Image 1 (cartoon, one colour):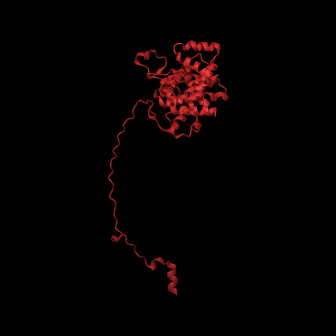
Image 2 (tube, helix red, strand yellow):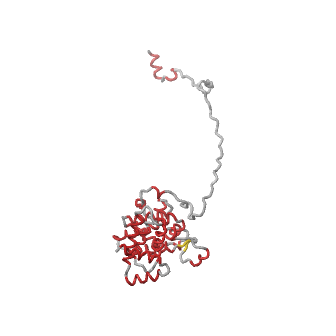
Image 3 (cartoon, rainbow, N blue to C red):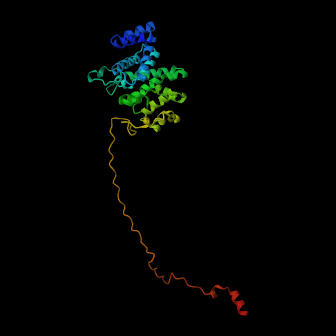
Length: 304
């Protein structure tokens, strides 16, 4: 059965022009089981293989991107497609290519001249499934967060696009408040691997700053969900806390010249130096005993 599904998968992959018609026919005949089985096999082949054909893997990744972007594909097939993409991280960047200047006006969803249709489809899928998915099955969304983590780590425009959607900034119109609330709710309520991946995703968008993550999410214990891997705390290019624009270069700050304050000369007192002679006013006069003895004592002593 599995071997028979592979030629079918390759045939669908090669048929780029009639993709929408193929998807529509699959919906009618409920043939998604074959596609799911084929993608599961491809996922295992690429996940545990040390060397694989990058050309074929990229072709599969491109078609998985189309599966996630499509409005006619079953959600289970989209989930398996995202799972396959986690096995080929090197094939993710071409899913968000740079748009040529001649085609910039025709782009449906773009950000800084990069195609964002795939990323928008992933965020849309998460927004839908986080709302109606049973808490027990919420772990099935882990692959989508992993795909976003892999993309945001390597693709600056994807990272900034997701940041504009989920992190409050100077452009509140682009903020997707509903999805932001759903992800934060997932972090608060769930205690599984999916919640940890969601926390790491927001951590990357918060420029790898724990304090900024706590401030933007309002979740004090969110740092406990982050992995122990020290590499995720390493600052990347553009992860500056001083500016929301990653293209801005840090300003050169000239060192301030400190004014030298003249020090007062220390008084050097020699221990062997002679003491100053006391004046007549400072000398203490010795009072005779006769003046100190009371009058009665003197009278009594004279009688004796």
